[in-house]
Amino acid sequence: MQEVFDFIKKCGTYYLATVEGDQARVRPFGTANIFDGKLYIQTGKKKDCAQQMIANPKVELCCFDGKTWLRLAGTVVLDDRLEAKKSMLDNYPNLRAMYDENDGNTAVFYFKDATATFSSFTEAPRTVKF
Image 1 (cartoon, rainbow, N blue to C red):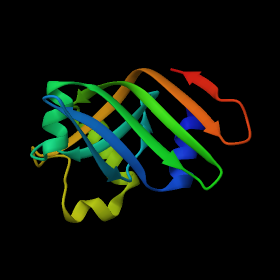
Image 2 (image 1 turned 90 degrees about the vertical axis):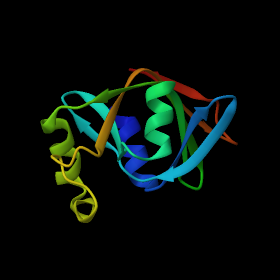
Image 3 (image 1 turned 90 degrees about the horizontal axis):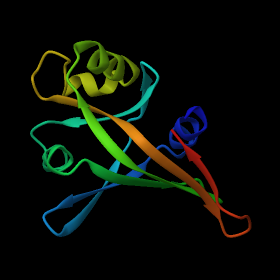
């Protein structure tokens, strides 16, 4: 999981795919955090993407560093613990202009049953599960 986290951080931006009904939705994200031994992402509960993840927690993210790309598929779990939200926001202090762990809107999700696949045009794909 650490390798996946490090790669996501190196890329900076990743694209998260969710499902709304029978329509895939993709948008750029930038938050990733390890807390309590799990990989977390963050958004606002009021946003469509949070509602989509609550309705259908199967998601996939993708990022690219110029040579290698990562596809991370798994199920996300909403974690409403203040400690999880605070950890994310402490690692992204610029988000505190919009979010607070006590605001009722901050949503953090962690990955479970995740499969990360690292691929490139020159090497065979490599898979990591956590």
